[in-house]
Image 1 (spheres, rainbow, N blue to C red):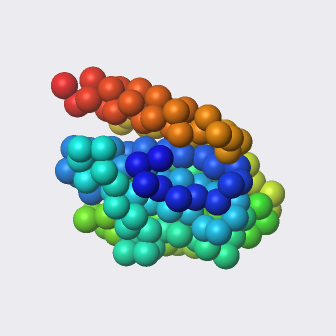
Image 2 (spheres, protein in one colour):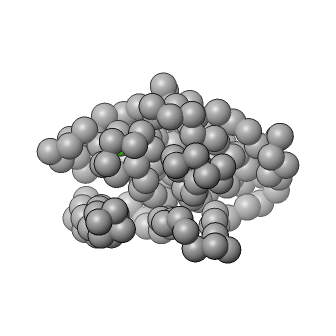
Length: 159
Ligand SMILES: [Ca+2]
Ligand SMILES: [Ca+2]
């Protein structure tokens, strides 16, 4: 999809505008080979910014992820669950870069984790949840439909 090459394993994808440019970026969670963060460059093009963002988690079996603005600074932060390899909370530092704050936040649980969900008691933040799919030949069409729907919701929320 969009030139994105991922391992043929269970993948969760979530979207958020991680760098505040108004375009939704995509974070892919993979159980094999690490996760990937792709910046939306506009015009249907994406750029892999995983290394610079520091959110690859290449040595863990990841299961799910969720974006939410945990510190109310206007940018989406990221929580990732793993299978017995420690869950990770990343603070968004802006400009597509993140910092692991799992230990200081007290959410570095090591155990068999699955879903990742944020919720907001005050209802003032938009949160995009993740869904899981098995990679199939029809994945690209499904991803395109998912992304179009998410972008439409994002645009609707912003207007
Ligand atoms: Ca963006
Ligand atoms: Ca934030």
